[in-house]
Length: 138
Image 1 (spheres, rainbow, N blue to C red):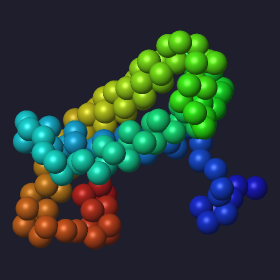
Image 2: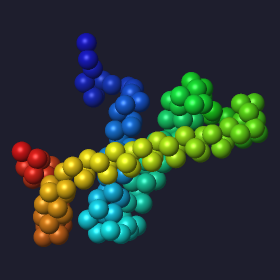
Image 3: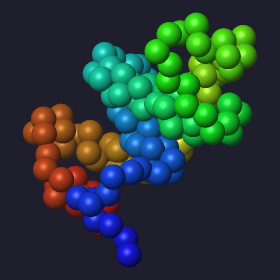
């Protein structure tokens, strides 16, 4: 039996990867629409980076590093996992974020007309409801 969101106490790797794509969507939209970036996506970048870090360090969701939790009380304990473990963690975080950014770019490029329509509406109204947003896709 599938649990509803209210009953769900876990999140899958796939769901986390999709969340990374969504979080990076704002930065990608700026780049596509304005050929520039701003500070507007800074909180999304912070959340995405923390999520990617947790996927690797806390939940052991790296095929390269393996199913291991790297949560330690003393940073010197990381040496138990190899001298380059911090570099490997950094590379894995970067890989997750780069992959999510690329997928967000693909999605927004494929839906460029919708991106433009939403952007034009937001320039006029500043905010839209979920229902108004969903009309662009129906």
